[in-house]
Length: 253
Image (tube, rainbow, N blue to C red; front, side, top):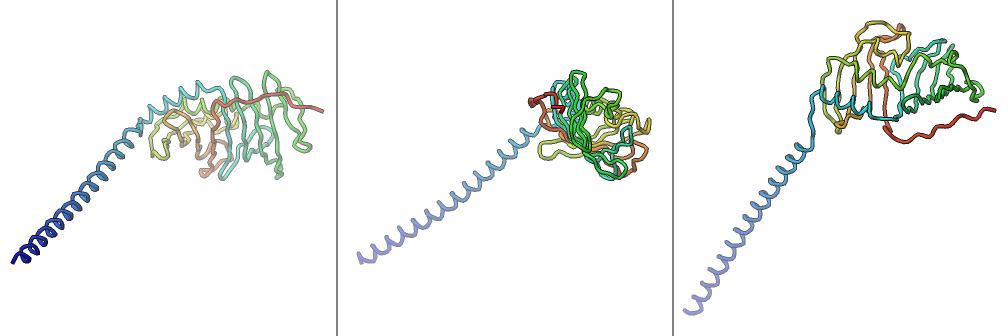
């Protein structure tokens, strides 16, 4: 009889232990779920707080300040379905360059002339001008009157664009950048294309701007010059803002 009572007590103890363990598992599961839920809420909250949101007007005004305060930058220009025409029948298919305000410019360009692809470099600072011979690739000093780039001003391009855009609208916010759609009058793009322009034409542009105002990309879409089509797109990328640039006169032999 005593043996049966002991067995009964053991069963009760085992049963109680089993209940306690199951209850513990439930608590752990509930706590785990609770902690995961709290973590996700905090994560979403942090992301919401870290994502700074501006209106298109606000981010453009921030960008104006950034551009005006920046001293140097680099850029590249490429085209889809077209090129940029300069005086002397020089069709720029692509270019890249370095800029330092107020008047230092280096441009390396690929130019199509009479169905030939030529590579040309241009340098100016301290009111001096140099250009490379597209055949020998040697530098030569030139007067500004013979300067094929005298009608364009890469230093002013981004200032003119960010100052004169109209009807801006934020299309998306991705990878910590605002994708902004806007319009600009073709006359305000002379610093890019010179005087060979379709006057008073509304042109669509797209800008990629980070929350601190740094512009990384501008797409200029449609007709700006007489030989453009509605499918012509000029793609300008900006980078290395305010990085030091070394300038020196080219060696002329």
